Length: 245
Image (cartoon, rainbow, N blue to C red):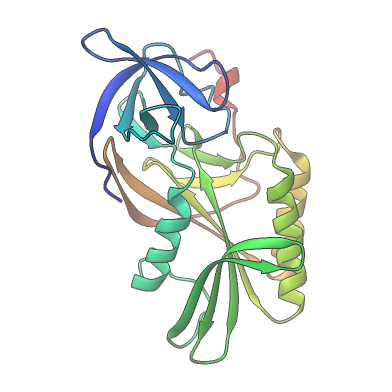
């Protein structure tokens, strides 16, 4: 993914989850739409460098989208619409390998309704496999450990429960985390944030739902899939918001 008309500015404050006030190098203060409703309290700090795209339109309330934030020396993409696109393209071009998938992919459709959920990706293969992939963007990191979620998600929990139902009905099922940053040695679930989500993932894995994570090479104006990273539900994760540093 390459973004156009990107400018690096300074983050000032985020009065609500939808917008942020930022300051350009010439001193102008702008309002940007934040393309992620997660909390992001560990990265949205006054003075942090953030990347915004200039996308003016009479239909928009702001002329800018905030797409990335710099944490120390590393860029974190926070565009919540990006993971699904990266996942679909990565699966089709072979960058993302789904274990147990056999044959050639003959059909791919995004946002497919199943029971009371809408899963992100549906696939069929030449060996008559039918596959659901639920994609989750991961933006929370500390000490090279990535975690999901950074805020409780009722919708995400429902998706996991219904993936189990789909697996029992014969579908191959996957939860695919796209870590929108590079420095990552292991990924896990933020159990302190949402214990029910961790329990649901553990139960889903027991039933045969597979959980995968891929990290990304991220710059202010671009994102590239990099490689698969281990997922370990029991990996310890320290909430960076509670860290002194």
